[in-house]
Length: 448
Image 1 (tube, rainbow, N blue to C red):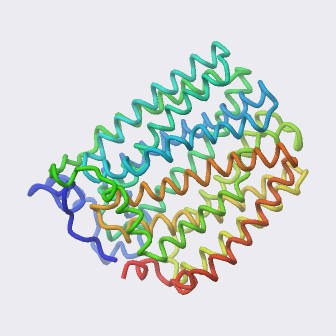
Image 2 (spheres, rainbow, N blue to C red):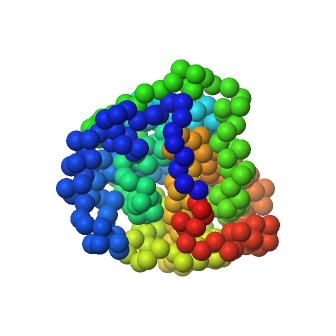
Image 3 (cartoon, rainbow, N blue to C red):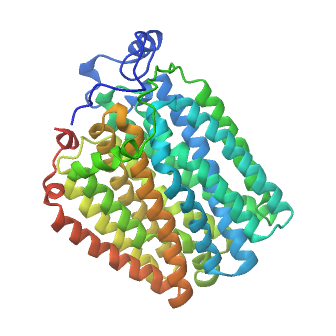
């Protein structure tokens, strides 16, 4: 589906092109961009644009801090309570604001300046990390930590759609797939380094306080890089920016009419909901594999190491010719790797399973991200991204709660193994219910 002309807000001014770039920036980018005949298979094409480089570095820095905090929260709470249910509560308090605010956040991202929504959100998240620093230092109660995470989750509900839609304004639409690949690479690289660094800092300090402070600095640096983006503010229509139930539901209605997009999101939602094992990694590190905080850091990093390797491979190969079947096979492999991890009692085998799991999951991420960028018109990208964020975040956080609850009742091994089997079942059901996905060839065909 080709991008429709923008309506309501987010209409480019006469000094901007359809991607929100000024004439000066367009000319600068043109000088950096080689002739079309030279870039047909250029794996670094998106990196030739200054705006995308700034956006990518900012996203990487912010993701690095987020991954460090994820390790710190999990380790600190389990070290203090030895309760899988407390770990599950982390996911629950973070999903509540996402459920409440994602759709309004998508509407705002389509009618207000996406750059400044994201920038302001990063600053607010930095303040939240400083709050966690103080709470950790004072050994505050678990409910206070939950309250801080709840507020940070509310901020992330607004940052997510604006940040996703902002990516499309940094590159021409011809190279969305390449940009999505590098975006995934940056996030996954942060997911490699973040857990490892977080685990090392905790091991040295014997507490998580410094990790939260480092994340606050990462948020501020990301905000500075976003400020340097040369994307001009766009005009908005007062009528177009009016929020209503109908306006909030437009993203949902769009996805309902795009069966391939709906199938891809549904597949990812239930696979993560059932097959996610990262919430239980502190338990596996401490009680099953006996590897301590350093081992936990590497367990958290292993999926992302696999994902980075896969992302670099995807960037250097031609586009998928059978994207639908590739997606289904990748998610099936994700479920099988989850099953192996749940049964393993050897550290090296657990690392290998998580490495393979992460590589296969990255295929799903790249295909789904490209479908969202190419399939949604710019004027609706915020709302469509909000629905996608809602589904993905819901599956991740509720999946964490589900894993923690099942682990509390039946044990962590049963929780992970049953989730892997459930993922395999979901792949079969999606393949049967959405035959369009099985038949999908090149990703560009999904927008036709």
